[in-house]
Amino acid sequence: MTLEQLFAGRQVDWGEVMNRLKQAAREAGLPFSDRKMTYNTRLAQELGKWAESQGREEEFSRAVFRAYFVNGANLGKIQELIPIVESIGLSGEEARKVLEEKRFKEAVDSDWDRSRQLGIQAVPTFLLNDSILVGAQPYEQLVKFVETGQVRKRDLGDQGL
Image (cartoon, rainbow, N blue to C red; front, side, top):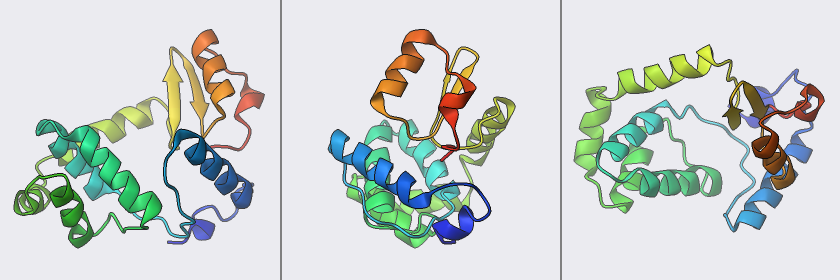
């Protein structure tokens, strides 16, 4: 699905959002490309749980970030996930079995259930005490959120991306 299709009918200035994301990535020293598509990342989430069980969560997360946000990989396809797993030294064959046998399905389902209970509907979402901050935010806004533990409704805007 294209990003335009995903956000159709929402009052979101996609160009502004992308510019903000690119700027944040630059400031953090992260690569970021002009991607036009979005893909279902469920399989990557299941492999992320597996990578965590193997003590490789951080490496996997970095590799998936690069594959998705820089190279535009379709993380909904097993054949695109296997090379990512192998690039961090984990077994592609074992990863395929993990996905086929749905070994981490329940763990990911539980994470999704928890996010629904908390009212989380977008990524990223920051939760602190009873306050939620949604979307890619400027550093200053994140500092304010952490220091006060609160955010005013108007600070959220339409940035639920």
